Image (tube, rainbow, N blue to C red):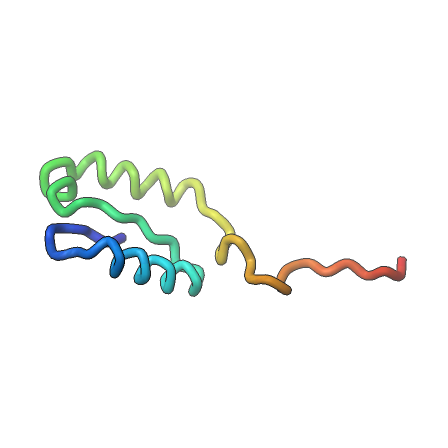
Length: 72
């Protein structure tokens, strides 16, 4: 989870998210003000994401995953 505030740059955040996702890390972003003022809603969103895990990395890098053989 990452909290975004006025000091965050959209370009930097996108790059950081891309790097983390490439390592199989799921990124959840919330505004810092929401974490302070709407804490229960933020926690509910985090719990919901934990109940619905995705396979990581998503999608698999090119060339990875199940391979089928031409011989059967």
